[in-house]
Image (cartoon, rainbow, N blue to C red):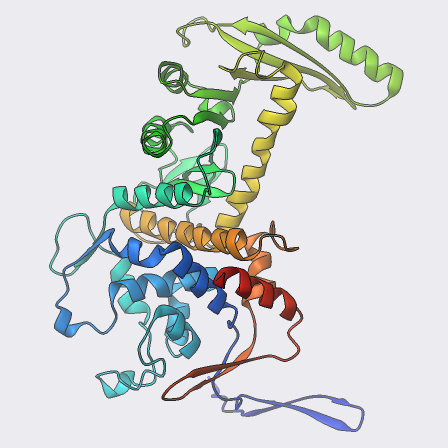
Length: 461
């Protein structure tokens, strides 16, 4: 292979001027907006509390990278768009990321070994050992996480984000597929998705992430959801005893165990109900009415009705079902939801159109998880891949807090995390470290300077 030592790159001329590029700009970072993430983290105290969810059996005398610093490096890296551990072999030289992580010398000149000097951050091998910790003490895997503690932290962060206890909260449940391309533990082929995958469970309340549980795909969509709901509801009611709670999900979660538990514990639910011939027969007259309206207007027509329904075997009791009889171009489109909510609180049409259909926003929240590389689950074990899922989830929590605290009232208050990364975090800057200061000279031509100023002021207020 021919070795290339080219230092200058000549491009098409600009009229009479040559255009020449060189890698001689000095210490420059493309992630100066990450300083806003650092301010956000200080507001919610994420990293120090996350550090408390781990045990660290390493010898303190031989540690150069503290556990909190390594967690910060991974979480900030994901938020800034660096998906892979391999990226950190180059990032370990970035003084700005070292500032975010909290290194006392962001130049790395205080490193013990000469070959590490100039590299203040951990490399991919060190970070990989962080991910590979086991549930039991191990000579070679000395850093271990407590999954229950991280689960509690996610809910605590949501509870603390509310200015005052709300009268009602809605918990959205959903699952998605994460394709697998290796031979990971508990790897199974899923017929619906047509590939080998995991099937993680997500629970959100609005934009707040409360649960990210990794599961194998050879299981029901609702598997494990009851235990997660019991945990979250218990933690929520301990903080807000009077709050009303509604569960919302598609038909994959319409299961007797979940519904009967809700009914016994004063938790309401609205779940999609899979169509069958019995349900379709009940709404025959409404379907005919919708078809007649469509024929008259040429526009989609909806007719709502409700009734009580019980399955032959799986349900222990009859339950309220709201039906949408709809005629659209070329076909009928009936839909059903089952709910514990009374008609006095939610009439049929409003329950379907305003309450149930609003769960579609959760699809955007799951897309944001993929923007933070929640699908990078290439470790061999489920435990290590669950840790990666936690890291992506915590990066999302940090960016969501930036939206809530720093971007309120701005044009990006509802922007997706990929947009925040592009417009607010990816800012070119020259970094200069002196004895008393770290100077971050950001690009003069940065297009969103006034927005940056607003976010800074709101985070510091």
